[in-house]
Amino acid sequence: VNEAMPLRALRAAETHFGGRLDGLGAALFGVTYRAGVEDTRSSPAETLARALLARGARVRAHDPLARSWPELPEVELARTPEDALAGAALAVVGLPDTEYGALLAPLLAARL
Image 1 (spheres, rainbow, N blue to C red):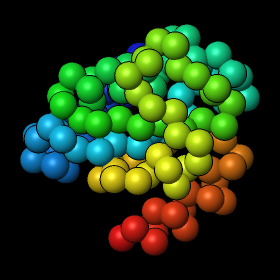
Image 2: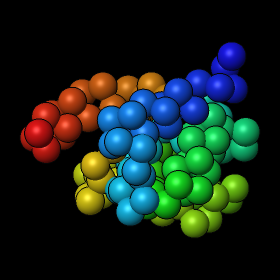
Image 3: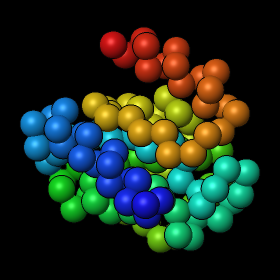
């Protein structure tokens, strides 16, 4: 069940965008394996990112603990949440991070 959760986000995005994700900008927040850990190996966000890329989406990610994402070098790790959101029509929070609670809601609201 847990391994399928990232694909629920993918299905929701496909439903929202009428099944077409080609060229869509997607921002992923929280790409480490779990909150508070720097390790990106076996991250649920990797499953989602790979699925988005396979459907032609442009993926940019942010995680305050991730200095790199060796499993997905084709995904840019943005320095700030604002940079991750640049050009994004889709935002997915994969892991809770204390920084995101206070920061993302106003950032996303300003884009509506």
